[in-house]
Image (cartoon, rainbow, N blue to C red):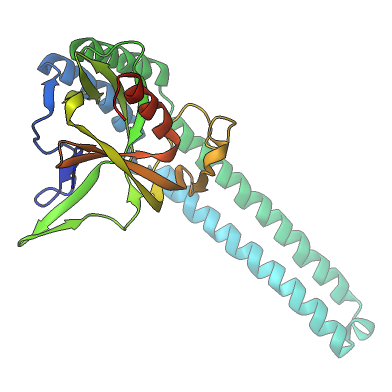
Length: 288
């Protein structure tokens, strides 16, 4: 079956647009699209990696030298202590104790200097990223609210994660992009309006007649997501029963997702932790 949120990356590996399908009902105006893009661009520009300054480059080199000297002094102290002890040199040459202590003091001193430089580099990097996130967030919220109004998203709509499908075409074969079970999850608004099950992204509205919702199938498989999108933590009371585990810094792993069948040809993949409210919404409209 085709994923309703399919993204063809055959010609452009950075493509984000969904394939055309008969359920695409509406898109936001170019004006709102521009506002959304502008709000995202602010964050992207400010958080993009910046070329280190000459001062930062010099600090890195200096810090590296200090770490090497620290390591050299520490290793020298260790070798001298164990080697001298085994050879019985400390009795004949008591000044070796002073040399050993001096090497340890030097190691500590250069370790301190290297850490101080690391702190300076961290402060410089943080200063480079210091900008008003609240302003960017405000602009994004305003643009998103305007988009929701254009798409007719009610305030009572569910917010649900779905799994898009990234693929490329090679000859007559469709190949999935990414490893099996790895998904780039997307938060969408879900609601029923005019006898249609609606999925709203930030820019599009997909409307499926309830008569074309053909049930679902359960995927008893593991899944991994690039990023956890919920305001509550994955190990909070709300999601604890689903056993979601951390995967790296932002990603999460879990087990089990559902494919909501549409029109006999399409499906929407919904993770286990968001399936129950969607199922209840459909049941309330007489769809099982």
